[in-house]
Length: 160
Image (cartoon, rainbow, N blue to C red; front, top):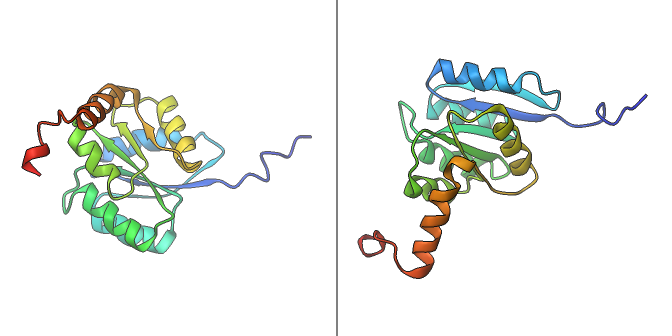
């Protein structure tokens, strides 16, 4: 009998989104995975901060827009208190500035809210292993933004 899976530590996930339907979809994608433990689902930034303090999940799947604060502000607070928590942003917007703002405070992943279960699983594994992950939907936007900044072609450079 192979016991290699029995000794694997499960990755503890906190789902942070104000849309119950999206929390349900994420839960449905993750629930069948034997190596995932969903420790909670919350709908506000303050709940995310409080829950990460109490439960210290390995990964927070963070909505970019929450009713009480931005996901970026919540991430800054979470990582200030618990720097070992990995944050994967979930966004509907293909906005390179938002992506950069998410990575600046320490988020390690950026996925599209309508991503499929395979991409979600890939994001969790890569981030848990200490790597960054950008959903294929956003990779072109991210590469173009990085190219413009490196080449000095960033249209927002003068306004910073």
